[in-house]
Image (cartoon, rainbow, N blue to C red; front, side):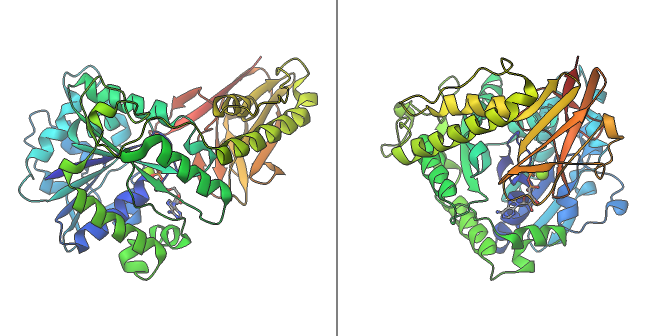
Length: 429
Ligand SMILES: Nc1ncnc2c1ncn2[C@@H]1O[C@H](COP(=O)(O)OP(=O)(O)O)[C@@H](O)[C@H]1O
Ligand SMILES: [Mg+2]
């Protein structure tokens, strides 16, 4: 039995979409497949039309049992032939606190899965968008990890750090690494999409699956209607992508993974010693990418100029356009300065990048978390902003992008809410 965790701290990169649809395709390829949902948001059950009110016990109950005697079959639902699901519910979010200080709590999942070794060929673990106890349990239980990345600008931002975190967590337990990246939400029509995919391949080489998943609205629709893509629209490009990916995963097998021993550096992979011959060194970003970075930096400068009156000159260092194109790190830095929430003299100023979004709203302590009260204005394509007058204090907030709640990707100040999600935090002085 292969155990595969799908992990990425970023919400919205497609973890749940990958789990639900990859499982459906694996099942179709005669793999006896089990999905275990470790995200308290319970999106797997939702995406597979398992009625929430009928889920009486769930993975949280199984993980509460300390001797591994809880029978996993008690919380297992059959979705279709070869396709089973162990769902989660919001009470899973409380488990971390309940088990705080309990020795070996992150080893419980692995022990539970031992019960079903002969019953399944493959187990997929969906994880929440943070590195808490639940993701740690998944990383400990898994032999392989798939990191889905969206191919928007932010995919390169923080990815190496993300991979490092996973590496550290696995090596703490003396586990080897079998981490691979799956490009998702690929939009072949945009130049940026094509460049990002090329750049990912350059930087992460053999750690990437050959297959990738295109942006396909059918995938969105199928999940919201509670069906895997194999049922909703087998002729769609989304279904073809997932079938191709499932076949690749089966054919490479666990032995084909880029297995690294603990302590060696991960996919910023300069460690050719552990990589197959056709593997890459860390490539310098190519010219197209640099051009794109330059354009982004120019954009950043323009945005800074727009926001300077608001934020007061001197608040943000004036960024000069230099003769040499900025490095991606410099561009990242500039972008960090613009996006996020900044305290201003009489409130806070919020700027968020949300490619392809129609509407972005702001909800938080200041508007009783009512997502209709604070619409954000379009600053330019895919960039939304709003200035809020606020009394001094500490405020938690989230963005609502086309109806979907998310924390601020550009703000590292976060706090876990009772639903196991992250709220962003801004302090006004
Ligand atoms: N390849 C894709 N094409 C179109 N929409 C996608 C694709 N992958 C994910 N999505 C959509 O993006 C959103 C976030 O995906 P989701 O799987 O919930 O991410 P995560 O579990 O990482 O938070 C969902 O609305 C989902 O339908
Ligand atoms: Mg999810």
